[in-house]
Amino acid sequence: MEPRLFTIYKEQVIPELKKKFDVKNALAIPKLQKIVVNMGVGEAIQDIKLLETAQRVLETISGQKTMVCRSKLAISNFKLRKGLPIGCKVTLRREKMYEFLDRFVNICLPRIRDFNGVSRNSFDRQGNYSVGISDQSIFPEIETGAIQRAQGMDVTMVFDGGSKEINFELLRLLGMPFAKS
Image (cartoon, rainbow, N blue to C red; front, side, top):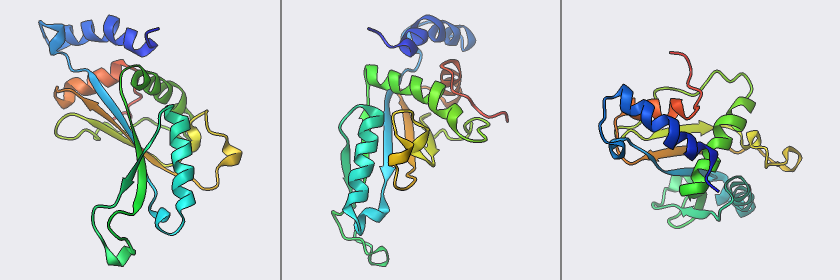
């Protein structure tokens, strides 16, 4: 079965973007290529169990096996050696990506205390959008009683082209609650 957000993208977002930006071909409209969810666990240098907990949480949230990120450099001031595990990430594509984005936009973001919308200025030069979350307990899959410590994460939405303006409008039409400027 096709994800709800992908159906909205095909039936509502593409025609709206074609009309607004005067694009003739629907294939010229940018589309979401992947979503990367990243958790940096710097304290894993002293206690590896923190990284294992972060991996379990990220696997529960995404429904996919995580990849451990290791340090590329040795930095003596941080007691960091090359090759030590310092975080984990997961890359979502296709159906899982649209299902995650649907849950993230419609369920998780409204659960943030004093939420006024996400920043409009978090686009990079290529038009990709990143948002940082300070606590993983906004996801309904996570049991709040089982959380030992608050762990943040970064969610990056990667588009296959398009400018910041078109990608902003695409996310807005998919339901992303942007803050008033």
